[in-house]
Figure 1 (cartoon, rainbow, N blue to C red):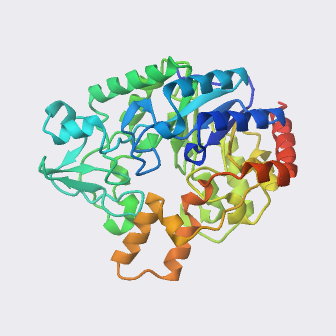
Figure 2: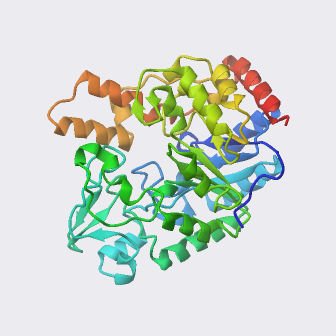
Length: 422
């Protein structure tokens, strides 16, 4: 039995909130309440990580899965948020980082302190195995002097990867999932889901491949699917896997009636605008993007999406209007679609200084990496800006959006209503 699938042919709209762009849960409720009043038929609101975190990576470095970060409010405020969204007939999806925790998490601190039980919660090697991280392509290994070994971090060194072959880790996350489910959460978006189980061997691929140097040792292993099935296979939660994938075969392993999850959000699809097969750099081509969207929309558990917290605004990238791009996203009649905050207004990238861009850990690591290589050229900066995540993470000017972008919102509401008429 897989986690909850949509009954019949009902199409569902997910609306993503980047919590760090908001002051509180109450502000989020007011905004989605406004959108509902305007006719935007939202079924689920997906919140970026709300857990206690030092925010080295904007909350994807969790320090405590059982606490809400103070800048968003209290646990009581969260409970009120869930109640308010239910009154709006909207389910809450929490972004749940599974691949790693913060290096400030109690588990990792106890591991560094020599407690064997918790040392086994993480992955260790006697040497750097040659894998690259996904932020700047540099090493994915960091030496821990107190242990005398290296730990794995597929992202920043402040995010040690968990050992999902350890049944204790699985048990810990079952408790976490139950804790939030009992508070009325409808489901989860699962960060980096294809990366969970790793084979700790030295790569034969060159380090020059960056993040791809070690990918064969952890991407979409069968053991990962088994872990996800154990966590979610017997629940009625609505679950979405984040996954960058070129092949539908991988999507079908993660989501569907015989798979552990409800749906898959393929973050590689928007890359088709300037990449062939979503992987190989190519000239810009909106029609190629349209073809890939249509192709993936035939997968019943695919979540159609063009914007997110992990990429710049698609309007700025393509030069097309917000209305035109939402229409393109829905043309293939996908079962699910996801709007990112501000997309309903057709927002474009804001003007940001280099210091503002560097405040995001990914851009900052890439910037420093270019300097270490001996030169930081205008071409390097242009390349980094082309994929800078922070453009989509800035707060919305709601007063301006509600007034000056009202026309785009009305058009998006109409498009969503037409798409939902099955």
